[in-house]
Image 1 (cartoon, protein in one colour):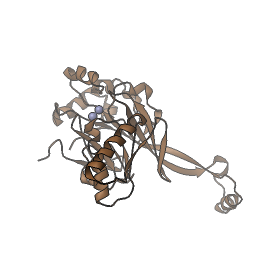
Image 2 (cartoon, protein in one colour):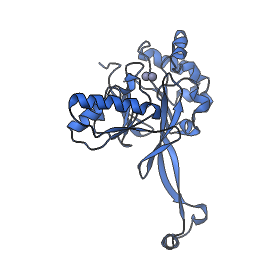
Image 3 (cartoon, rainbow, N blue to C red):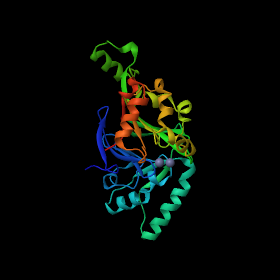
Image 4 (cartoon, rainbow, N blue to C red):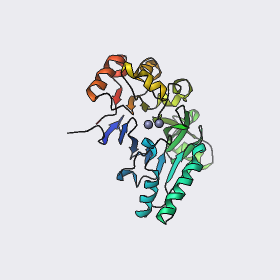
Length: 280
Ligand SMILES: [Zn+2]
Ligand SMILES: [Zn+2]
């Protein structure tokens, strides 16, 4: 018997992910091959060793486990650990963590760091994460994780390996780096995301998009609380070039069978075929 609050473990466009995402209860998405988590919910044990946390906003369904994550990392003697989040919230988070550390009589090595919209952090030679602004009821960020690769500049394509090695040895720039968006995550968002989010969000292989409400009578509930309703996604079906569109933060007010029925009924067939509700 699976319950709605059970952890989901799957692959999205070939990328392994596990997580939980339910409106108002808990949201986190762990991407083990990328070495990061988007939000951390109440911090299940599997997130303790993850050193890169990208925290969209301070609502506790996304962020309740932050102090616990710092504390558990200390117990497990895991050095470092960074939670990147909106600059305007960093001072308050640090004050909260200082209080918890004082109450525990310890010091945490993990820390909260600011990431402004448009800024990136490089997690590995081949992986960057960039923040973008999202409109919700409190300061909120979205994130795009992009793969960084190198390719020959056009004038060197088709040349022999020996030529390229010699040119590299001479210090000539024979290759250039380029990025390709892998996974985008919007956190909680109103429909303002559609005109304001960077293009990579809608071109990423996987887009994790909030869709708290689906039923017609829940429309006011969605808009009143800075959340998306399925109808707002259906209206912009042409925008999504993503290989997979994952609908997250789904309400418990609508059952899984009804969610699936509404998706196939309300989304155009081309988009419905690429859309997955994040359900156990
Ligand atoms: Zn939420
Ligand atoms: Zn929220």
